[in-house]
Length: 348
Image 1 (cartoon, rainbow, N blue to C red):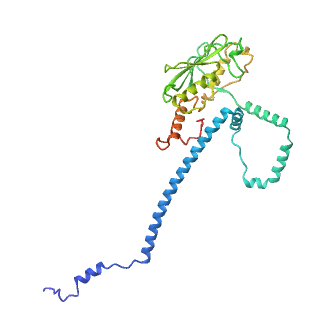
Image 2: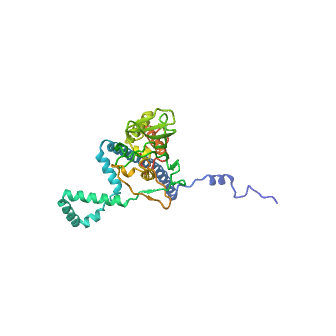
């Protein structure tokens, strides 16, 4: 039996019209469209805020580094400011009381301020001297053990971190020019240190520091292995200052402070070196030198070198990269240790 499609209620045209029929937009669909539009706006606004925040953080970092650089320059021209900065660094950060604490103890602070006004200048000086003496007594000069031979003499070369001592020389106690209050200049003293080359400060170079006798006056010399003329002077600070100035001149940038630290560069202020020099005969006869007591480290703790761009090759490179980045931040890549704060400063 065949089915009669002509008599059926099925109509193909009506079925197509029913499928193509679009229902009017309901209130939930309108809400969904509004939510999608708001999400897109919030995403774009969030991206703009993130970019603005990153730019502000970068400006803050740059301003902090500029402030450190300006403070370093101010310390070079104003010795009093340098002393205040050193004293503040020794005392540590000053804890500032909160506003609620000030308001609750207002009467107590007024009484203390009245007492401070009546304090005389002599009392202030005596209290500052007492604090300095107590801080100096609390510090210990700890040295690391040095290998010695069967006669008890140190075995050279002596590796002391970034410093290597090849000879301690001989102490000249008969002439006051060969020692000061805090250092002794033995004739024949030789030490080496790795630092930036004068030709290309980005390359490593071995500097040899020597002390010799020139007409009964100590002569200090810093010679490099890159075939540059040696730097000579009457004091270690003069030699070190000329070296740092030559580094800046070769780069045409002020990447390092020219404030000298000659005794540290030569190694004359290293506790282990001072202890070994003091063990030499004749040191007790040095009239100007003040004897220092040392304590040998039982745990073999190593002496930590200062993270100064004028002494360390690694921190010199960091200072060079930072200065180059400041000159062209849009072209050069930001250094990886740009956010480092130990610095310490260290940069400067």
